[in-house]
Length: 186
Image 1 (cartoon, rainbow, N blue to C red):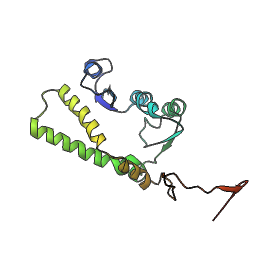
Image 2: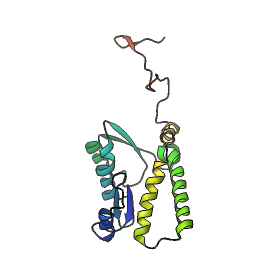
Image 3: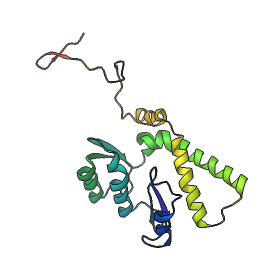
Image 4: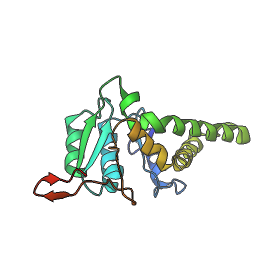
């Protein structure tokens, strides 16, 4: 989800909805006065991005942004998206938030590379609409270049993925009970 500065229902918002150059299959675009994640934007994300991909009970790790901690937001996640919410305590995001640990630096570095290449080859943007389109395309491209192992490593480093023996398909090898509640320790 990409949030641009703008007023809902005004020029920028309409441009996002009508300009066919925005890839709505791979991205979701909206506006907020300061391009900030407020309650409305978070609600849009839950309904139009997060909930669409949920296929069963899920845990979402959020930082301590005021919007994330609103009871209304937590309730929407639980009720509409079957999602349990875990909040990272303030000051430890860099240690406990998987996206912050492993993904965001690589993602932002790639975005910067794409931007610098554009400016070297084309000069600065001709107008705000061109810049918005470039940002949208760049975000999608940079995200495509983040591989699954990078994301997985963020969860491992945050201690949010159990480690241990796995079978040939990568599923945890769990002991089989030999009788009611007794696990074969061998």
